[in-house]
Image (cartoon, rainbow, N blue to C red; front, top):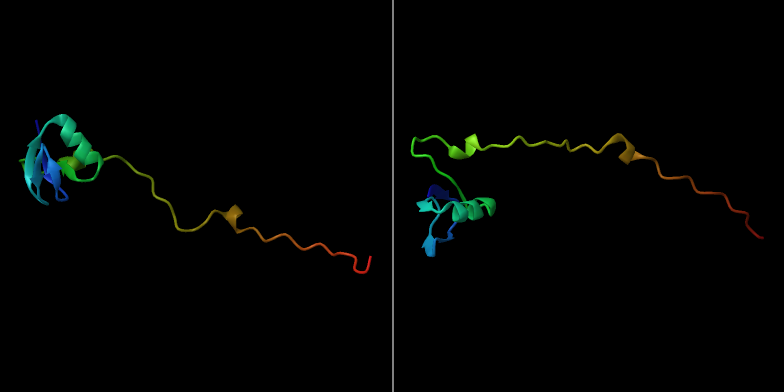
Length: 82
């Protein structure tokens, strides 16, 4: 059994639970709710258990890559009247 802190009102273990409530769930139910963003692991020692499971993520800049800023191709001259 795993203790989880609820991040949304939902149903867990067949009963309604509310935001902020600490519930004890099976590992399977806890993982389902964690993946769906409805719960996070809770540590009784006051430490955030989610920090221990943190995964390094990449960050992206808001600027486009240099090759994305190409000039549009020039229009070809056409022969008029023929």
